[in-house]
Length: 199
Image 1 (cartoon, helix red, strand yellow):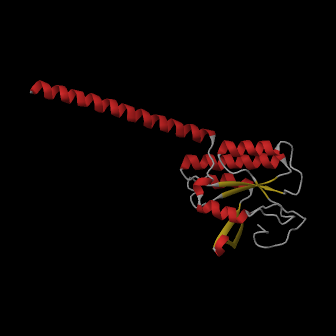
Image 2: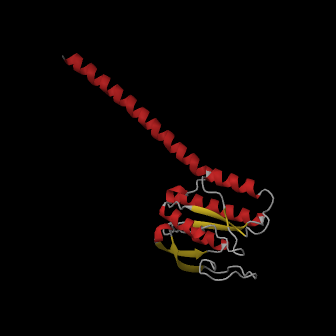
Image 3: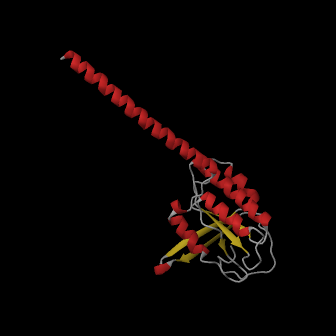
């Protein structure tokens, strides 16, 4: 959030206790300017946010930031991603999501690449985007957030339960089409038989 506002990197870290907001202009290729409004929600506030059925309706994109050197941070970020994705599937307010691997200047935890690749592929979203505030390497993250908000269908995660539900609905729809065709065919034969009998 501080880097988004143009504030310098600080070595001292103080965790976010309350929601924080930041608004700034992001310049896109071609000189197009978009206003980006960010809301930082502490991980403990996510369950409160999801307690309302329509809580994700005003959200254009959810970004999950984790410390790339800390496996427990990764696990918590993926849990929150699953919660938001599942809530979106249940309520119909599916939200595009990104995972951001912060502190890219530090060594990643063992199995980081394998875990992040698996989660990204399983959920159908982009692999975590590495950034380093310390090195001022933000990997065009703010442009990417704006792009995902403008093209949400490209970054909506899908849980296993959501995939199963969609497959079930496709199967039901196909079954209804086949049953409709059979009923239509049978009705036609009954009609044709009655027409021939009356002639």
